[in-house]
Amino acid sequence: NSYLQVLPSLDVSFAISMCSSRLQEYIVRMDVINKTPSDSFALNQLSCVGTKWAVSTLPSRDSISFVETIPANQAVSCFFKIKDLSTSSCIEAADGSCGSDIVLSPGGSTDVFDVSRTPITDFHYQERHQQGKLAKVPRGLLDFILISKAVAVNSSKSEQLLSHHTCHCSALSQNPVWWLMEGPRTITLT
Image 1: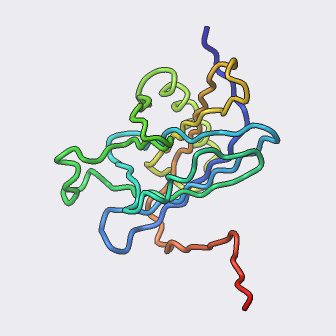
Image 2: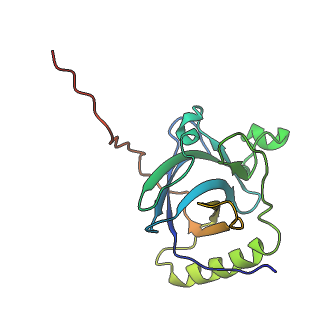
């Protein structure tokens, strides 16, 4: 028996900015906040819905390789690149070297969930409809699906896959990408 359970576990948002160095390419910042008090989640896959967009890592894969799990009450930001495959200037579209899915799980797993099949596509249709009714801005053409896994504390628990649908994202932002680095600081006393 399979069942669908909706949990307000992760808050996922996207910010899309034009890439200043290449036309028809955009930088995407994905922010993920784990709102649960006790559960951890592993990011598994990010997909762009449809065939118009392709998602890939930035030239330095370090931007996502450190994200193994998102512990309870923690947040993480990841950066990606998306390309508009509908333009004739996208060479990668012709040779098939870029796709609409990217595996985020550590260890180099190549298993990709087909987001164009049931039940994910059915759920996505409902989410797109609901988010479209609530949208205060014109509907964009870019939808993301983030698939994550609940990290089980004991191995007897069955694996839980979660899908997070963010619809009507706009890739037309003229805002520049800005970086804010926070974290441990080293102080050397002499």
